[in-house]
Amino acid sequence: MEVVWAYRFEFLSGLWWTVQLSALSALLAMVLAIIAGVARSSRSRWLSVPATVYVEFFRGTSALAQLFWLFYVLPYLGMDLTPFQCGVLGLGLCFSAYGAEVVRMCIEAVPKGQLDAAAALNFNRAQTLIVVVLPEALIMMMPLFNNLLIELIKATSLVSLITIPDLAFQAKSIISKTYQSGVVLLVTLVMYLLVSLLVSSSMRKLERVLSRGRRIRNGP
Image (cartoon, rainbow, N blue to C red; front, side, top):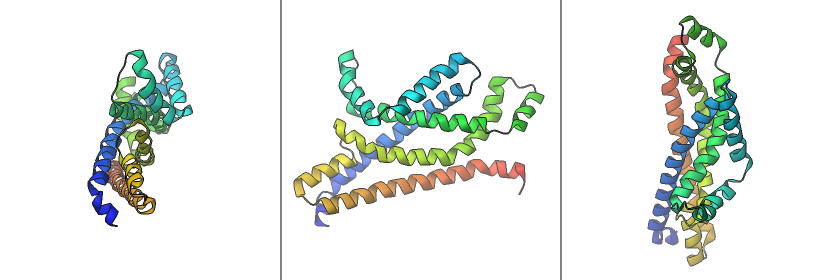
């Protein structure tokens, strides 16, 4: 384990890059997922069709190919993003497409009685969506968003291929210097696991907080 202590700052630096990238790309993915998911569930074809094209494109293409396109092709089109910006944008766009399907399914799973109650209160579509549908659907989304967030954290290892010094990048760099791949990869796996467990635990707590009022309303 001497190699771990000798390169502890490289491991921590890589972990910090991974955490930053995960947080920002997850935030972007969630915002885009809600927008695209709501648009897909809309009755208007002007909203649902573009949202469907967006979702199917980013779900149907490789996340790595998307990162490479942003990193290598955009500069030729006059948009020179930093590697970190490419990583956040690429992962955000990719996982927002999967998240949009989660949003759409949860919106459609809201009980019809809730919609009838909103209609009885004379809510318009926007009010029904904001006040009734999204709060109810958000509770159902949380376990699925939890899984997607874990997948996103693991997918951050792809950004090492566009020169971002994340955890995977640092692990490869240390292995190239020490040739001790077993120990280095084991520590890397444990660090990914700890981040994933921490995020998963936080998401479950958030889910319980969001469900608390619902349980009270629905009774024991």
